[in-house]
Length: 107
Image 1 (cartoon, one colour):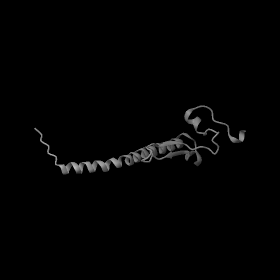
Image 2 (image 1 turned 60 degrees about the horizontal axis):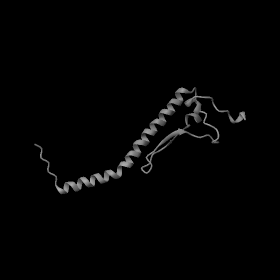
Image 3 (image 1 turned 180 degrees about the horizontal axis):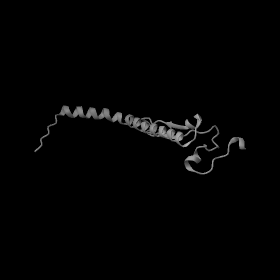
Image 4 (image 1 turned 90 degrees about the vertical axis):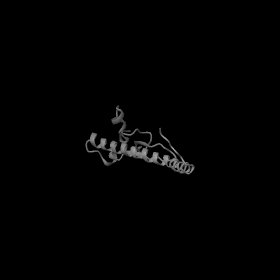
């Protein structure tokens, strides 16, 4: 048989410890999400170097990452937009397939 004895003072200590952890959970979650997102960004950058023959610095740095915060537990990794939003990013056809959009000089 197992006997467990809990003193009232112990319950107060447990309650205090859980309350402080409850405040830290969003912060710890944001850090974890951001670390995963950072790893995804680094892997995408390595893949660009692997796939393309001598990619330019502009191409290598075309991945953007938005960090998670404890107020907004979402993070994103995407391609940076070109100067004009009406043009698709030139890397999208490499990722999704299809034809590459025309250059500005072709218009």
